[in-house]
Image (cartoon, rainbow, N blue to C red; front, top):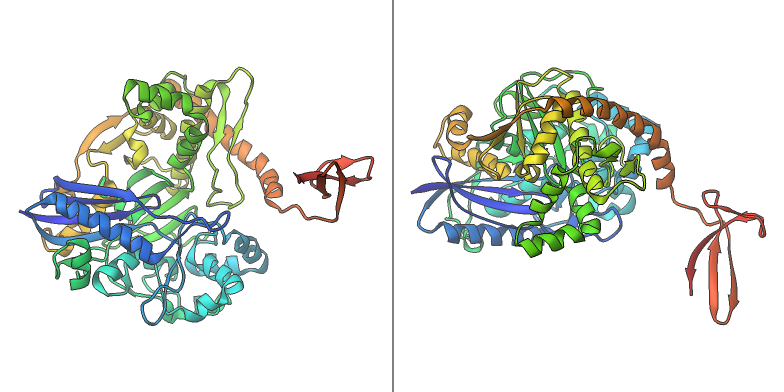
Length: 540
């Protein structure tokens, strides 16, 4: 029996699925994607650590598949960030993930000095902190030695392909991060124009997503259990792979991904040469474009809230011997649309519009319960992604909207998304859409199918559909307006809160071996006795 392997190396989870050539799941395995947090706001992964984890989970899936003939491999991985190799093919430093926010300091600088406008004019998007250009600028200031050693800049899935095949390349979707806007070519001299101390030679060659970029080496075969010599497809950024795995690949289709990040996606035939258009436009498959706008924290909001406040639901789930998510969903379903007047902004890790955006509950009273707050979290994520979808579709009504990611498993959340978008939502049967999209690339590279239409017909089927509820739709139409009003009003406060408090002087008083260390700043309360602002830092 012939089979293809789809690998989805996401930000938090890596999933490997082995499919029969008719699109049926034959075996699968998953593991946590390694992440280090060396400082606040930093999200990194050692490249050998990443490869070791992914190779191990591939081997697990292969062992579970038993007696199948693997004929192709496809890989998807998170986009943006930066994975740097030297001229010997060794890691320059740990990979920087797209959830990393160290580049946020670059955004204001480039907006002020005009380099952000250069990006928009040449590339069609501005800096947002996790993009590779912002990261390169940060490294040039804080780690110049890393750029001195840099030979090739790759993205997450490209590094994994490199370890499988010994070939350095990317696909057209990832490469278009550096394309001259509206063209299929790298923007010559973009690093020079942005005053970065690197040149265009760091950019990898481009191999189309569904084309073989190399074959599994003997060394990679030994580590992963894959057969040596099997073709590896160039693959996709996970946003594109998930859209493809959901069956959203033709112009006019749209998709919402509710994963660690949220993504709102529109597939287009042409690209608008308007540098102020919302979201990011990337090359996608056969002469198409994918336009998307991200929400930096989607299911991450649910994980954060339930980690902090979900103990009562977790205990109930354990007592009933059900998944905690069953209890979360039941709790949300018990609260009416609108969360009894409570609104949530889902920017707990900032936003792609502004790295200093923050999360928050609005309208909170003593009457509200944690159930209301949980419902508000579900709704806040859905409202945020619905607003982004209207932006990337330019308010044109989508006629085919697919929902994927972990959040799509929740029927109540899917109902909320349908009402928030005012569109019927289709949810494919395959829950691992990113791995499915990677496997479709593998099947095309292996020659199993000639076209994406043929592959989609075999690999993608619709499991259920969710329709907007008229009452909820009316409520969410109002909530979207309130959501944006609150966002505009609170953003200056978020910016103020993001600024460090500068110590102007220190004083200490001690009694009985107790010392109070105090600093004063314009951002903390005034102390009339000492005629200065004060803040207690610590007791020692």
